[in-house]
Length: 198
Image (cartoon, rainbow, N blue to C red; front, side):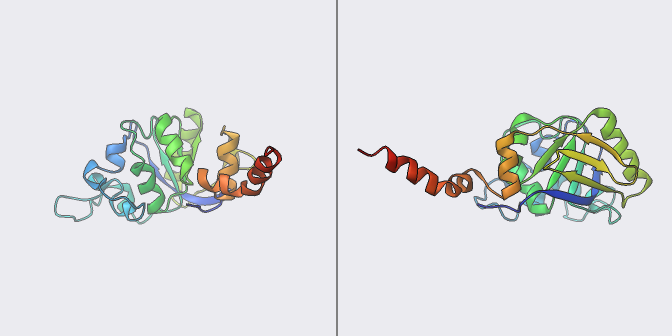
């Protein structure tokens, strides 16, 4: 399944300065029965977003209308816990295209990269600067430049570089998942095979 191409994302951000956010908090286990990737965004952070009677919790960040954007800024150790792919699906389906943290659980990070979400790892100090900038102005925009591998706080010009696997970078920039990548090489693979048929 192809995803949106990711090159340069300029957006306001939703701040969630909570450490050790695990995948069960991102998408509770009772919502894992679906096999399609659509609809999970409705239940992103379900138990934090809603009361038992399904009314929104006013003090939860996603229910605060002053914050919006395609970038989620989380605390240290985001995506820990079980390996469920559904956590990444829920974040993508909600509308986020980038998650920023000072540390990601490896499985969550890879699941995100596989479906078109860019996880950007920054230093703890730069993460604090991002949170401070958003606190000062909820409309603060970040620029995430995948080709250059930089993230910039546009209001201040402060910038930091981030690392990404070159294969995953290529796929994100082209909107590919692993199958799309192979499909794009179909003619090359066919030619390679034909050269070796005796």
